[in-house]
Image 1 (cartoon, one colour):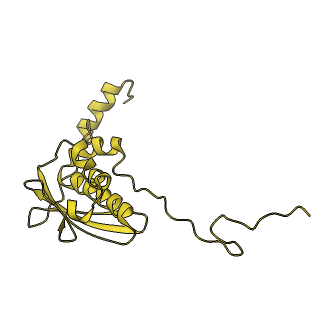
Image 2 (spheres, one colour):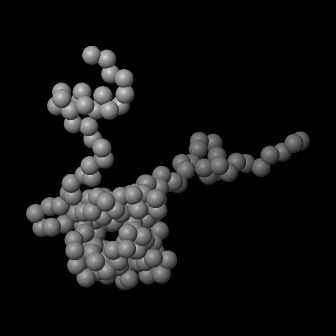
Image 3 (cartoon, helix red, strand yellow):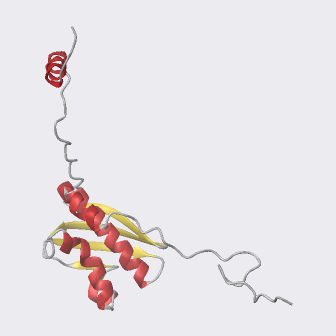
Length: 161
């Protein structure tokens, strides 16, 4: 039997029992027994463990309200970015613990964790969050100090004579 077109190939595959996937299947939500989705986020040396569940929109960081923990408005805006981009602001309660780095790194880690947890709870949001760049771990970190130098890149003053 010679196959000459895609229709012939499709018919041959159906007869053989091979199912052709017309659309990629969305993955199943990863939800625990308490109805929460868990993810970890990282930025610089900060690591955030994030749990989300449907609720009134409370965000708790290290047992404090996010406004009390992150004093600057910019940091509060950063952690809400994935929820705003996915149009889910005020629909999920977020509970997270974060360690390491400083306030900026911790806010970035929480943002990364919230975005990943949202994709675990609602896999169809992955495209929106990926396009916004929230699922990519920001790999920038402090450069190490080099041997024989004052700092990572600073060198001693050059003398021509």
